Image (cartoon, rainbow over all chains, first blue to last red; front, side, top):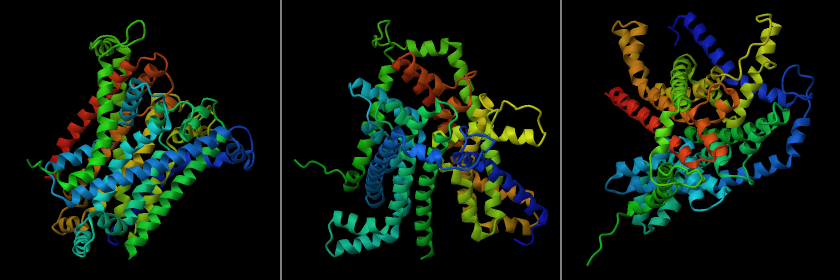
Length: 263
Length: 282
């Protein structure tokens, strides 16, 4: 807006620069010293080398943790989106008594600490005599992520699809045909976005995974154990790699949604 | 006799509701039951009693940890909101429209740094041999390294970094929805820029502020990683005590009681902000 005095623009630019520096400082330090050729991830930088990435990719614990994280993230995100989509469809398309209460119940886990979800599952599996396992972690991640998938789907289910759905019904399609042949494809970008969001939150989740696993652990728990050994560029390399994977997933989502918006 | 059929829509919501019930509500109830059966000297759950709750309030170190948790959470919530608001405002009103999306994505990009690694990265930057101290020494601003890390302020610092991004996102979402013509109309009618902001834009953006503040409180008060990595051992927060009960004392009933007390604090925060949200909507 051209009528604004330029001092205001300068002040805004300065403030934004400071914020960006603050926000990017730890990531910058993390990534820069993951390429450290010396033995400590702190200045001075002795030279750039990929040796710590080689060390990380050859570290059996990190590789196993990575595979477990992919499994937990993929399964829990798929379940979250399926359950979130079905419930959003039910609440958006049918008259149900107590709709507000049901909605509040589904959203409830968003309003509690991960600690409570993790502790509840830990105490319950102890009470049932079940040992720690990745299945408990998957269950817990669906509890915390399904409300997000529900919210994303709910925001996308508008009047526009309702008319197409009833047209399909008039032409003889059954409820499940409508659901998976008409509604799901129409909001596919939202479903994919919800999946990616749930995945990035799950594969990197620490507290529930830490409380409910022992021998088969996910990547953040492996890294937690690495931290006990002190500052180590291998941790930088693993952390930079996780960051790369997560932002790649989210940038794919961004491109998906941007493309949709331009249509 | 005809049995009334459940509404079809309810069947679609049933799997989700069952999941929440079976894997969240029931476990929390089991946990509440556990918290009411304190361990006996033999290490097995004893008879029904609220002794663990009484023990919590009788132990000054525990009460102090709860107070420190509340103070840390309040400081972090206020600081990150105050920093995020102008930042989000700049992105909406000072960045040209076609660059806004990129400016926002850049502002929340480090959000996707691994949760555990994020605190570790701050430790790298703030440690006595870390990048920030080395830079200050090189610029002759300080003569010897400062102890930035391993104290409660480092915990707050790490938290503010994370929640600055979160609050920027929620406040941005609120600000971007406001029709800029409202404030322009106020200006045309003679309001100063400050008055236009205070009477039009700020009240309309309060829902985003409240959502961000509530998420900050929930995630901050229950966080174990940030204080454990950055905070040192002088001042422990509630989640750290809970972990100690699980790992060192092997006392699940006490850990359960503490987790429920922590949840009560979150519920109080919700009630406080809910009232404020309703006022904001008027």
